[in-house]
Image 1 (cartoon, rainbow, N blue to C red):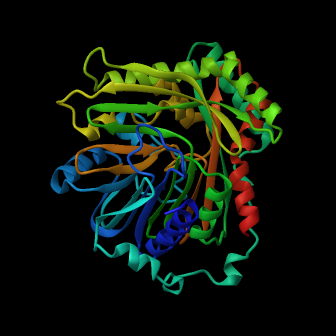
Image 2 (cartoon, rainbow, N blue to C red):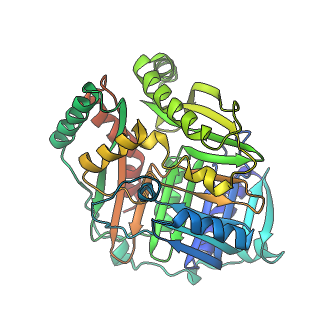
Length: 425
């Protein structure tokens, strides 16, 4: 199967999956590393499912995993922090995503090394998908799908700048070292076709941890470049992103920008703070002495941006359940700050929106207990019942941060989503 045939099959497979109330896909978009299990995974329909509110959600997930010992796919809301630590979320839950949701699919296929594998379902599943007619998928009427989409910022630029300065004052007083500060862009009365929007977003911004997740009328349309945590055998791997630079169409200029990011001491300082936080999180479940930094300040290029990514690994203690490995590293340090609990307290105080599924994670756990989860960033969250669309963007604030520069970085991170919505509607 060549690249064009593979791309066509993936699009048709996802369209086929959207006929069910619950489905998801994970797509590496051609980016592969030594930790990737598959190039593409598609799960559809439900054998068993778990909805769990924050409080005992991780314990319920452990029980669910123990009971079924099968492939399971799911999402973890940022608000699960309230179960892990003595924290709260006071902002309105406008999107109504569950705090934790997992399901065992009726159908599961994978693509690896350009070969289709049927993991759950009939042996002719790929053929059924090829013969599927798009008319079977409920669609929006043209009048609805072409309504003008009005995207609004939850806070204006001046308010954003003031809040960054407020955070810098906390840093100056020694309350924290670094905090990830985010802002929401939203649209009410939003009528979109989630499948079409996701397809366009990932065409414009193909990333290694992209994915589509539908739970009835709630959708995640993700072009995430970041891995939260994965387990391969007894190894845990986390790859936080801290450090962003806009790409140039001129090759020489682009290379210069890339080298500047590589050597930028401010970006390195932000990155190493989070690396230390992740090392500390992994220590909680590791065989003593096994936590290590595999790569520090790696520079990786995506269509809109260069990113600074570090890789940290550990050997999971044999007495630790895989779900507890996730619990003890959640939420991911790249989306909180350091020290972690104080940073999350400040996030709740200073931000103006509930994060919910944004800066949470979605991914899978396989029958052996191996797993892979992304970070829900560069993602559109959509409630089709409320016709409410939301995406958030943010960045790391340190004392060295420039508020105007941080604001521009937010707009850069939002650029692929904004262009997608303008192009498609």
